[in-house]
Length: 299
Image (cartoon, rainbow, N blue to C red):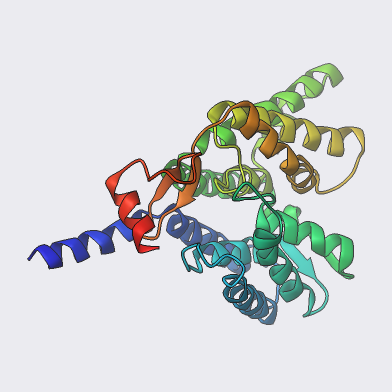
């Protein structure tokens, strides 16, 4: 009975993994978008994206043999790329997926990924791969879409305990847009129209909230959210460039180690049994709770 109970507990705890909720949420958004919004992505591109991403993840395990072997993060990256990246050929998506997954092993600082993998893959594609573009406008400005993105996003960020950076970013970014709107004397309907942007909410709840690439301490996450919002605002409003949100997160990524140095805190890690826990800053230390310790010994 004890063996059965322990196995049942391990099996049920795996469903507490926030990545499963993110996979579920992104899958719903991709399916709904393809059906209702007619996303301009071909089934072959989706298949090639996942094939390249998962194969690259398997190859990267040799570079980081100490990490638990799971495909959940790779699936999330592939879903994000299929949601946002568009191309007029079949080779761009798998190359971008391979670059995104490889960045987790190639660009690391103090045992953390430096770049959000999906962000790196998107920037890599639009800079180096011909015939590619990011398609945030596909979501439109629909209240129903915005509501679904917020609901699913809150489910994911609450599980990962990273809702603070999502809401802080929205407060800074939308606050800056509100100040500009008031200065220009525009109607507030313009601001609420921007608030309903599915692309903005997708970014806030599914990209900047990534616990593996964001600051460890809450104060660092607030500072990082403010920096990303400032860069995105300047990129789009002052420089009149596209893809401001993606570029802002990419440009601000090297500042994460600075925030971690100013405000040291325990590092977030996915445990082998699925739940989200934190590693101590001391690499020789144990997890904070018993379930984490069991997972580390299993790894």
